[in-house]
Image 1 (tube, rainbow, N blue to C red):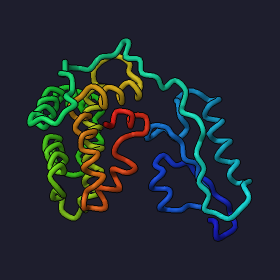
Image 2: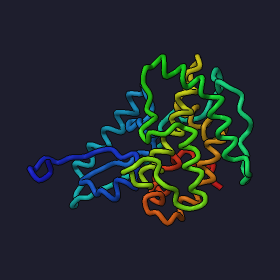
Image 3: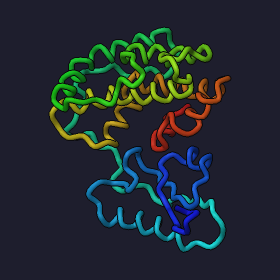
Image 4: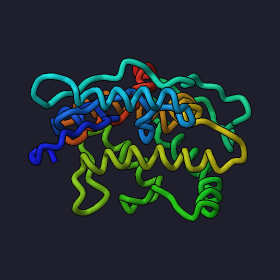
Length: 236
């Protein structure tokens, strides 16, 4: 489109990916994945984002151009009033313990009935891309503490499998959590996962090891995709 003389602009949710791809004009936004315009049902704020994106078309100078949106989405504070996890989970342990993987597997077992109930109600899930159950995904991710694990799926590079494994683990928890009646915002769920589960603690503890992995794909996931921006304050 640019070669035909039509200027383009877009929105980035993962800055590291956009920097590598070098598109002509992009705006990076500090919002949750899947919400490029910020808070749902806030037309005024969404219009601000859209106007900022369109303003990039008027910027002087050759592409690539990548600017940062200056504000977080409104209403991002955590408020768990009226929503609780479907099951009682023990407080996550900060220090490295032999029980780390066992605690995650116990959580998965406890959440499985709620995940199944949600699956039956929605008739769909976004897990299963790697062809392994969530317990297997957790073991695969845990193996990354000791080096580069084998990819759980033939033909999928370990770095891509690591990225997808992180997403599948989070998605399993989120789909199980929203199966319980009650209202929870995406920020509620994110704060619960990262701050209140052994699985969230696993990924936070794994982050330093992934940053220094000998596999470039795993390192890239840790650098730009593994821990959301709004949860990075939990990193040690």
